[in-house]
Length: 124
Image 1 (tube, rainbow, N blue to C red):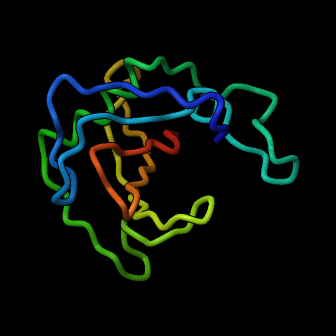
Image 2: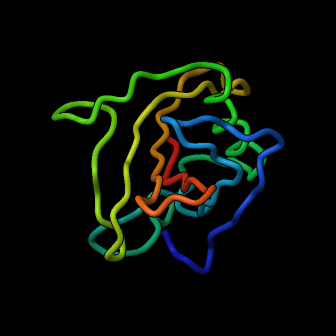
Image 3: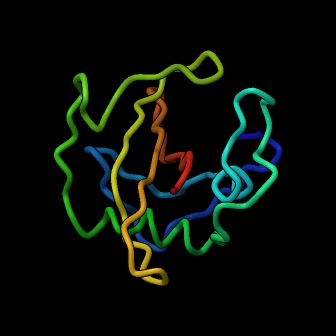
């Protein structure tokens, strides 16, 4: 993700996510749609999807309709990571892409010093 490409969207309704009330999300659409080449430290040259900001908001808002049991253990769906020197909880789950009628994996970070914002890392 590149900070200069982050987009922040306020949700129509706050989402209770692992005991935290998320009112807005940030994400990098280029990262979501192209992925990341770790060797070049840049986006992949080809697109893997064509999601819009509205699609990403819709994916995240799905968490307002069901509860996930988050497991912070080896092989679980929640872990602790450090991003740019700050600790985050990283969550991995599945959402439904209604346009494609299929499940997609979504990766979300919530900073330890949480205020009201979640960060969508990628969808694939």
